[in-house]
Length: 476
Ligand SMILES: [Cu+2]
Image (tube, rainbow, N blue to C red):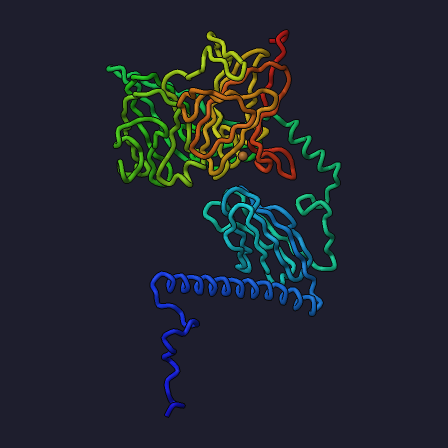
């Protein structure tokens, strides 16, 4: 009988038995759970590695050429080794951008994980026949913004690797220099259309300033010969600048001729809630062909902007954005900042908005134009200038002016108690920075976003670049 005695009741003082005490029991479960999770993750990881290894070994065993291509993702481009001989293709993908991206081969459906900034993934695409394959980012809007390209697979016998990468295939280094130089010497280039024009109001009997804005899809020359479909206010990108005084009663009659419903949000400007321009919360969408009247008191000074809110990921990045200023520019007159005295009687020779964009049909641009169509800033030696940055794009842009430090005196239109000098100002989406600079040295000084792929492609300079041209005093 003793042989059949159940072993499930150990002696009460058995030290090896797990304790039933609450707390430590939970701790052990958590440890076991974490352990199992780690084990599962390890197994999954090993399986992936084994799969890639097997895939490579398999390919090698069948005498198939295996090509490993380095591909880098960024806002908004796919670059790297984009050609290979027919055979097994492995893509080593790295996200060198600031926001999340992925990569899919459209024809095979092979796709990386969604990669955070600096994330990497290895994509075993399989064997590809000669032909052209589309690589793109599946995250909404990224392919349209530029994250699509072609992978060219050639016959193994005809394949000649390009020493300098596919985008330079067939070009000598001298020819590449020439492309870059030519693109830079094309600045400043004439194009049709100019944004940021001051919009004059109609003055009503009671003194109200009434503005008229019509949104529609128009052809827009973003760089010489490159005509895109812009979504524009009053036929310009950025839309017209509106400037009013503190205390003005403002009306804006908005007519929507775009194909989708719209509204106008007054970004950084105090309004009653029902004038905030956020359909359907504060108003109905303004349907195609309809008109809506906004009305509010310009109560407080503002370096604001206006843009569509509904369908913003289409309409705003395609051009429906503009500057809106209430009151005077809050310059730090008479202040000394890092040993530099800002004169009491300073009158800037010019003051301009610099509206940044990086997406949609307009793409990487300053004031709706891509280099070399961007407008140079012309100033006389010894004069002061003011620039207001407005970021209406999808990512931050570090704006760098050569030679002259920029005095940041207002953030989002709010005057800073402690203005500061900087040579590079990082402007995130939605932000405004107002800067003052002193053009002390003559010459052509470039002025650009310092994310280098926002200003150069293999075929030359483009995008978010302009220049400050300082005329010498004796020629001023
Ligand atoms: Cu940039």
